[in-house]
Length: 82
Image (cartoon, rainbow, N blue to C red; front, side, top):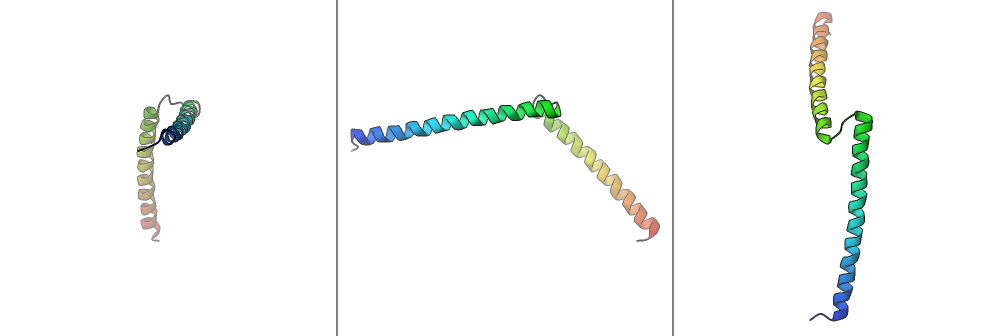
């Protein structure tokens, strides 16, 4: 059976953990807010979803360009036999 003092000590420890967790949550919320603000200011996106759509469109564009480069390189390789 636990003594009252043991229970009080345990509760104080839990109180400290909760306090630290609140600070972590506030810090994370601040970082998220700053990141979203940067996303808006630097990349002109209001939310993560619109940024992800642009990223996917850019990936497709990059893939298309890479395919063209490879095709042209292979053509040059064949033309100049190297």
